Image 1: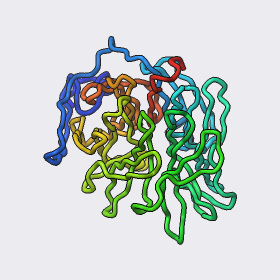
Image 2 (image 1 turned 45 degrees about the horizontal axis):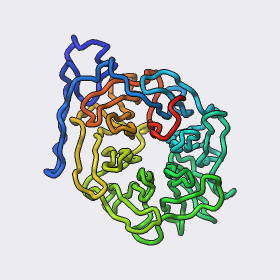
Image 3 (image 1 turned 90 degrees about the horizontal axis):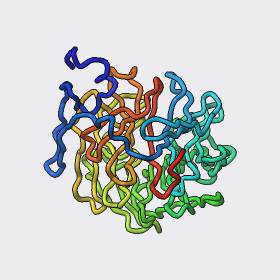
Image 4 (image 1 turned 120 degrees about the vertical axis):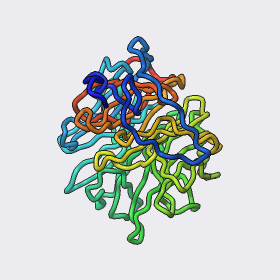
Length: 366
């Protein structure tokens, strides 16, 4: 970047697009992937309505994180969870009426756990929804590693609320015959016995479920035999499993449906961004597997994290790491629907990511 770009642009930099030119390296895409062009930042006069929930770490050590809500302009911030030190609350998921937020709570070793909890938006009351066997442990993992009965590895996470508010889908990892497996499970919103969504079929390496707006299907991430990952789709009754994105690419990390159900939003190179920087981009695909599109211009210093669409489909809110900016801490950015314009949403010195936009059917005030 040239020196006259200034600190203000540093604060708003994203996707290699601004009033100044950023050095970037464009990743060559397959011929069936379309790439859009870059445009200037979103004007400050444009203020989309809505509320988001997201994860914020409480310090640079990335040991403790909480669930926060805010308007999309960064105002009316409310801390929804206040975990003890070493506990990480992450991956918030709105109920469609906006009254509750499900999230994953990781507690540290020596008794490491990972469970799905629900916080009431009005009162702040928290209920643990999933319960691993007493003798099991997450083994200190920071991610969801749920368990089947009699498993010594047991964690639950990645919650996603069904549109009717009756069911939560989540990632369920466990160890079976010395092999760790990852499956999509379902549990009633009031708790009770959990059950596997997909019986048989592909090897169990599935995670990050998300319901379609009409509640008839779920998208999820599947790890392929060659170590890559793809977006898959399955009916809500567990049948009709099929692959949407190619096996020679690496896609995933909590795909998000557009409100009209016409597109899925996800990123390349999914993984744990707090452990290692890895350049990534935002993509969309139609639920029939066509129209795979890379939204942004690739930049070797930009890592997109998981993202969420606005209810009207005009905007995206995403976590983003820009090396050399904000002490390399992820921040939240508002993007146009094609991810070619953007600006900082909530300025904070600490890591912020995993944003989810409140559905249009939810309450409008935090």
